[in-house]
Image (cartoon, rainbow, N blue to C red; front, side, top):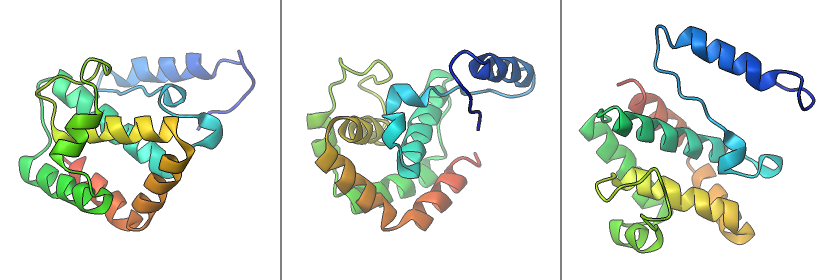
Length: 149
């Protein structure tokens, strides 16, 4: 984690590290402050942001998560959030979200919906965070498995 006053070179240093690592890895640079209120961010928010960005980058590269692992992960999310393909489709505006296309998988659309709700409504933010925190160890474990692709 980098901290410091405005203009001290945090972003410059991160970009330098990114340029160095891009020689061997595909680097995903996240601007968390664009996704959530950094003064009111929780670790559950960060998990959602990472899932969203990794899925988007994979789709951009023409790659996908392992289908069975993704199905298990999506099933857990559907179960714990009580969301379905239909409820997510109704509430996510494809035109309003640049990272989505009609063929985007459920997990991408769900992440967009949950992050928008966290950013927009205090009541929904609290509900989503509490829901995810109920089974946080499973969320962390599944993310780890999903990212081992």
